[in-house]
Amino acid sequence: MNQTVKTGDCCSVNKNGDDSYDLIVIGAGSAGFSASISAAEAGRRVAMVGHGTIGGTCVNVGCVPSKAMIRAGEAVHAGTAAARFPGIEPCAQSVDWSAVVKGTAELVDEMRQKKYIDLLPSYENITYIEKGAARLIEGGIEVGGRIIAAPKVLIATGSRPFLPEIDGIETVEALDSWDLLSLPDQPESILVLGGGYIGCELAQMASRLGVKVTLVTRSRLLPGVEPEVAKALTDALKAEGVAVETSLSYRSVRRSDGGVTLTIERGGKPVTLSAQRLVATTGRVANSEDLGLREFGIETDARGSIKVGADMATTRPGVWAAGDVTDRDQFVYMAAYGAKVAANNALGLQDLRYDNGAMPWVVFTDPQVAGVGLSEVQAKAAGHDVKASVLTLDHVARAAAARDTRGVIKLVADAKTDRLLGGQIAAPEGSDAIQTLAMALKFGMTSKALGETIFPYLTTVEGLKLAAQTFDKDVAKLSCCAG
Image 1: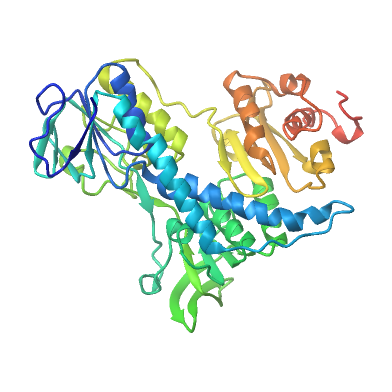
Image 2 (image 1 turned 180 degrees about the vertical axis):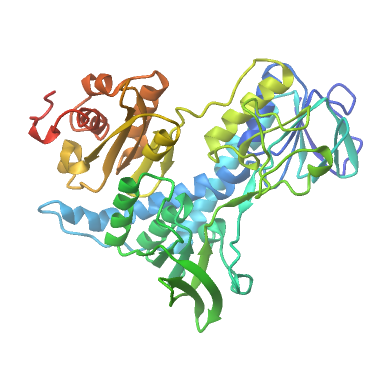
């Protein structure tokens, strides 16, 4: 039977009567569970050492609570957005922020129990050691004064929010993403620092739930995204009343009467912005500093992320890593995938390699922003002779019928071979549509083949076909379903 071991219970052992295992997994989030299950299903003995709350970032403080509150914001917004249809009067919704937060916390508890805690008894080869501060030693780890032995160790300790270095920020009780999602009382106004995925999602969510929001970023929103797609989102946020401040530098943060004042500099001139609370969404930093990596010659980057190869091995033989603690993609599904790759290679089960060539990603704003493969800039940097097509949603029948043409689709292909290299979407249903393009990239489709594929009419995903046809023709001159 599976065991749960307290770190203070030094005499507890695995089912074989000793304190040695085939694999030690440090971390009990998505990556830690994926690695442990992969090993246990292969009949190997695993010690999984908790690092923080079981379930990790996604279920506890990231994906689940944020998307739940984003959906709540969408429900509120739908009442006023319905006015875009002739004959429909807008309906303003009342919002009880505290009740929304409480309901979200209950969902998190339910998901943590169902998808993590309740799974452990199903795997008799996994011994779970609760919340141990593990450190690497020769032949295994030391945790809570206890030595656990294994020939292989997999680090999956995740990451945490990064607080930017701005003069005075330590004095204003800045919130991180989870602080905002669990804030018991609704703030009147917030300043959101950072225009990446998290900043954009939370800014729109808070605005739709009745908070006055100013979104502040040094460059532009979603700086790694195609400019046409980022502009579509920026325009949408501004249209909803989110103040967007871009192309600036931070000077200082200070407490002020009733809140916080942020001084920025733009064009050589200082500008002052004020709100009740400050929310920092300026990236994440790896949880790697207390593991003893330096003593073991395990290389990290500037933010402490562990450098791994395509096999997910670190620079120390016998040690692998996966998830947000590494220098790989920071998405929960890629953490689980990378952990499976790492566990298989560590235990000699299958020779797997981490491959993100057809990895879809999504920003859960409205319109949703999603992409897969190479951007135009990345494709050129990779040496391709690039061609690109850009299709605005006013050419997509689904958008016209929904009276919502916010958004754009951009495809990138190799000009010589016509093979699709990547694409991005800004559309209300972009998260679902992007998987079709991911499959097209996975199987090496050309833009011509995509444009000739039959799609159902009046769907957002049909826009991919139209965008593919846009390489060679003016789709505005086609009748419905033609081509």
